[in-house]
Amino acid sequence: MSSNHPLLSPMRDTRKAQRIAWLVLNVVLIGLALWVIRDFIGPVVWAAVVTIALWPLLLRISGPQHEPRKASAIALLLTIAVGLFVVVPVVVVFAQTVSEMHDLAAWFKDAIANGIPVPAFLPKLPFGSQVADWWSANLARPLIGSPAMEQLHGTATVVTVGRHVGFLALRGIVHLGFMLLVLFVLLRTGPQLADQSVRAVRRLFGMAGARLAVRMAAAVRGTVTGLVVVGFGEGALIGIAYVLAGLPHAAALSLLTAIAAMLPFCAPIVFCVAALWLFSHGSATGAFAVLATGAVVVFVAEHFVRPVMIGNTARLPFLLVLFGILGGAQTFGLVGLFIGPALMTALAVVWRDSAQ
Image (cartoon, rainbow, N blue to C red; front, side, top):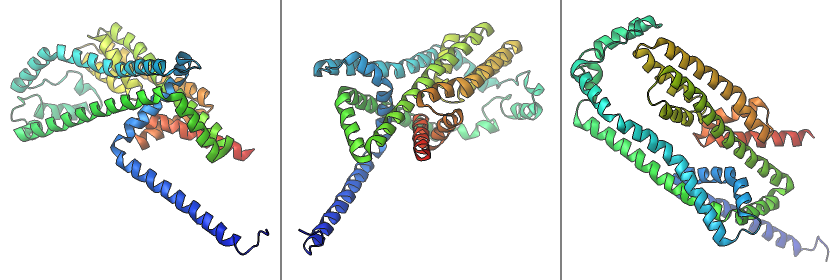
C-alpha cells in the first residue's frame, strides 16, 4: 500500500496525537507526584547521594548473586552505619555540652548579675575601640536592663524561640528517619533498580545518555569522598593545634571541626571561635598558632586537595570543580555540594562530545 494512501494520513495523525497526549500525561503525573512529596524531596535526594557513594562497597559485599536475605541484611547494616555516622558526632558534641552545662549556667548567672568584662585584647584590634565602647555600654554592665538584652526579655520571646528550635529539631529527626528508610530500600533493591535505570536511560537517550549518567554518578561519588575524607583530615590537623595550644576538650573540638570542614569554608567558624577563647584567656600565642594552622590547612585543603580529589574522579578541571561545589551549595543548599559537580560533569561531557 502506498505511503500516500488517503487512509494512512489520519492514522499517522492519530498516533502522533496519542504520543503527544501520553507525553503530556507523563509530565503531569510526574509533576503531581513531585508536588505531593515536595517536603521530602531533600531526604530522597540525600538517600540517592549516599547510595551512589556506597555503590562500589555494596557491590563488593553483596557479590554477583545478590540473594534477597543477604541483600536485606547488607542494606540494614549499611543503613545503620550511615545513621550512626550522622548521629554519633551530634551525640558526642551534645554530651560534651551537657557536661559543661553546670559551669555554663554559673557563668551565665554571673553575667546577668555583673555583666561580661571587656576582653583585654579587644581595644588592640582594628576598630576595637568602637567595639569595646559598645561592649562597655551593653554587656559589661549587669545584663538585666541592658539595652542589648531588652528584646530578649519576656516569656513570649522565649516561648517563640523555643518552639522554633523544637520544630526544626523535630523536622530534622523526621527527615533523617525518612532518609534512612529510603536509603534502606535503595540499597535493598540496588542492582535491580540500577539495571532498570540504565535500560530506561539507554532507551530514552541512547548510549551517550547512559555514559553521561555513569559519569555524573562518578562525580557524586568523588564529591562525597572528597568532602568526607578532606573534612576529617582538616579536623585531625587542626586538632593537633588545639592540643598544643592547650584547649580543653580538644578531641570534641577536632570532631566538630571535621564536621564543619565537610562543608566548604565552614571550618574557620570553629577554629576562629577556639582562637577567640584562647585570646580571652590570655593565650595570644596559642590563639595565633590555632589561627595560622587553621588558615593554612583550610586554604590548602579547599583550594587544592579537595578539588583535585573530586576532579580526578569526575575528570573535571580545577575551576569547574570549585565552581560546581560553591555554586551548587549556593543554589541548592547542602545537597548542592553533590549536585553541582555532577552538573559540571554533564556540561563538560556535552562540550567534549559537541567539540568532536
